[in-house]
Each structure stands twice: as structure tokens, then as C-alpha cells.
Amino acid sequence: MIKLIGILIVILGLAFRFNSLLVVIVAGFATGFAGGMSPVEILDVIGSAFVTNRYMSLFILILPVIGLLERYGLREQAGRFIRSFKGTTAGRIMIIYMLFRQITVGLGMMLGGHPSFIRPIVSPMAEAAVAKGRPMPQKVVDEVRGFAASADNYGNFYGQLIFLAAGGLLLIKGVMEQAGYEVSLTTMAVYAIPTAVIALLIAAVQYHLFDCRMERLMQESTQQDGVHEGRNVQ
Amino acid sequence: MMITLEHMYYLTGALLFIFSVYTVFDKRHRAKYGTAFFWFLYSITFVFGKVIPAWIIGLMVVCMAIVASLKWTGRGSYKESSGEEKAVAAEKFGNRLFLPALLVPIVIFLVAGFTKLGALVGLGMGAVVGLAVALYMTRESLGTAANEGRRLIDAIGWAVILSQFLAALGALFDKAGVGKVVAEMVATIVPTDSTLAVVIAYCVGMALFTMIMGNAFAAFAVITTGIGIPLVVRLHGADPAIAGVLAMLSGYCGTLMTPMAANFNVVPAALLEMKDQYGVIKAQVPVALSLLIIQIILVYCLAF
Image (cartoon, rainbow over all chains, first blue to last red; front, side, top):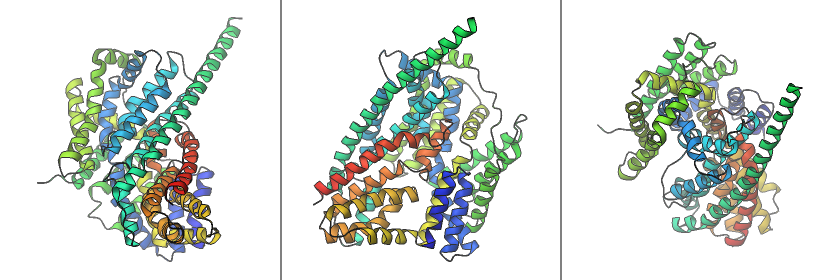
């Protein structure tokens, strides 16, 4: 039981909004000590895992090109592009992106991601579709961005296991075979399809409700601005 | 000479080192030394990660955590273009602006599909190709591009290392045997004679342990060996392939709900410059919970 101390520290630390890095370090050392490890052993595990997982941060390499394009109006262009389609909503953009992500990742293509698609293209398009030229309160901007980010996660997670050589399927196969059960990759990929379809439907409902709420929020905020301006005139 | 992943790490390290140098020379940076030190240490872990003994890297990682939690890092000045300049440039370049950004995934796809180098090497090559085309289009210098990259990485801030950091915590949990304790606890409180109860235990266990580990793959082996195989497959006769894949998808529902999966939830919030670092998770919770219930129903109906 004492080994679970790290989990407790993480939950409390994140709930009280301490710096996440500090929380993780404390939780890591507490867990290591509870598991009977020495400080050097703990540092050793942290260091080697940190180095092994450098691939998680390789997206840093694409920041210069995205930053440079933003300097030349990439985000503005994404907004202009969307405004040229009348009647497009943020939710429709997100669901189309999610479907694109599901199909490509289901075919084994890693097309997508937050740095290369959401920040430069999908999120500015969704923001422009909500704003329709009106000023947007920061709260609304944040919510649109959160939803835009979710589209990439939904598409990625609920599409990837349809690909026959997906890392996730190979892992399931490995674990099952270690326990003496033969499993077929094709069966697993086929049974990942219902969830993919249902995820798309649930997301479509969520994004539709999101569109309605955003429109209401935008109307409220424009009306409030109108009231303020009225008072100023008086 | 073969291009390997290690070369891409050298490139990342070099870029981080450049960020660090630019930070030192950023005259209007309030936290320049802390920030520069942070990116410098990080660049060392990329370039010399395989050479320096792991415990020293661990010590550097702890240093980075301390620098960040003392708030010694921050944003500087980047000589950004004005809103008007951006609008004029967008007018001039039009949809051509998307080309370099789209080249990155296209190159990744080509490299991953037609060579043996892998998608991650493709990511690095895509970044180089995209940058070259963007530089040619805009006639800008490499220095400007590096500075723009620094603008984005400073916007993300210390959260950049959070994913790797949490992976390290996961490794510690694993070494200390946390997974076994969790699986045993779940197995003792579940009424094992009910099929529905063990299915719920497997799916919810996957989601919960994924939330703790921040990674469904890490949770899968533990929960499947502890609950899935003995209770769901052996005792109640579920099909291991169907139960396995649906349990993995239950784990993904957990990934959507946890700040521990920083690379999917927290880093994007920082990258999008959102005020609320949990904003992405808040958007995802309703979908994740409904899909988790669906997974339980699917296992119950399809796997037996």
C-alpha cells in the first residue's frame, strides 16, 4: 500500500495546482524510496527514462517553420480561408479534421498532431468560424482551442488500432501470447471499428452542442458590449 | 552513413542550444538566465543523452524541475511582426502559406512508408524540408526562423519536458511495483462470479490505471495480466483478441482525462496559449466517459 504514496502525491499536487514538475519529482522520489531504492538508483531510472523518451519532444524541430509561417500570417490565412466558405461552423471543421485523422491514422499514416495541424490551421479556422468578425472574449477563445485540440486526440486514439501494424495491437498480441493465447491482428483491427464509428458519432453530437453554445455566448457578449457602449454615450 | 533517430536528437539539441544563446542576448527578457539555463540543460540531454551516465542526466532533470518551479523561466521579446504586417503577408502569399506546413506531414508519410528510417526520422526530415521551403518563400534568414521557434517554445515553457518527465515517473512506478498493488486491490474488491462485474473491472481498471500512468500501453500489460487474463478470459471465457483490443480502447478513454498524459492534454494547452492548462481535458471528459461505458457494453456483448 505504501507504494501508492506517489499516486496520492500526484493527485493532491495537481489538485492544488502546484508546479507539475515539482509534484512529479516529489512523487517519483517518494515512490522510489517506498520501493526500497537509493537516491542514485532513483536518479538513474529518471535519467534513463528521460533519455529513452526524447522522441516525445521531437516536435520541437518543427517549431521554427511554424513560427516563421505565423510571422507571415499563417493563422490569419487559415481564418480567411474559412471565411470564404459561408455557413461553416467550428464544430464542422473539428469533426471533418477528426474523420481525416481517423482515416489517415487507420491507414498507418502519422498525419496530424497539435504542433503541425491544430495550432497553425485547425484552431485558427475554428476561431474564425466562431468569431465571424466579432471580437471574442478570452474565455471563448480558450474553449474553442480546447475543443480543437480534442479533435486531434479523438481521431488519433479511436482510429489507430484499425491499422494492422499498429503499435497498440502488437502490444496486445505480445501480452496475450505471453499468457498462452494466440490472437489475430485482423480480428483485433476489425473489432476496433465499432468504437471508431461510435466515437465519431459522439464527437459529432458534442461538437454540434458546442457550436450552439458558442453562438449563444458570442451573442451575449456582443449584447453586453452594446449595453456598455450605450452607457458610455450617456 | 545511415540517418538515425540519434541524429534527429542531435539536431533538436542544437536547436535548443541556439534558443539558449538567443535568450542570453535577449535584452528585454526578464528571466533570461533561468530560461537560457533551462534550454541549455535540455539541449545537453538531447546531444549527450547516450554518453553521460543516466544518474547525472537524472540530476540535470531534477535541476530543470527546480529552475521551473522557482519560476526562473519565462517569455522574452521576439521582434514579432505586427497584426497589419501579418494581414498584408497573408494577402500576398494566400494559400501558399499552407504549403511548407503541409510538407512536414507529407515528408513524414513518404519517409515512413518508403524507407526503413521510421516516422520519427521522417519528422525531423519533414521539419528541415518545410523550413527550407518556408525560408525560400519568405526570403528570411535562418536566424529569424530560430527566433520564431524560440517564441513558440517559450510560449509552451517548461511544459515542453513534462511528457518525458512523466514517462520517467511511470518508469519509477513500474520499478517500485505500483501496478501489481493496483491490480491486486481491484481483483480483491470485485465479485468474480459476475461476468459484468469483471468486465467493468477490466475496462474501468484500464482507464483508471492509464490515468495514473498517463499511458495506456504501460497500463495494458499490468491490468491485463492482473485482471484481464485471469478473470475475464480464463474464468469467464472471453475472446482474448476482442476483450484485449476493447480494453486498450478503454485505456485511451483514460488518456483523454488525465494531465499525466501531458503530450496529448497539457502540452497542447500550452502550445495553444490557453489560460487554463486543463482546458483540453475539460473538453474531452464527457466524450471519454460515454465511450468508456460503450466499451464495457461492447466487451459484454461481443467478447462472449
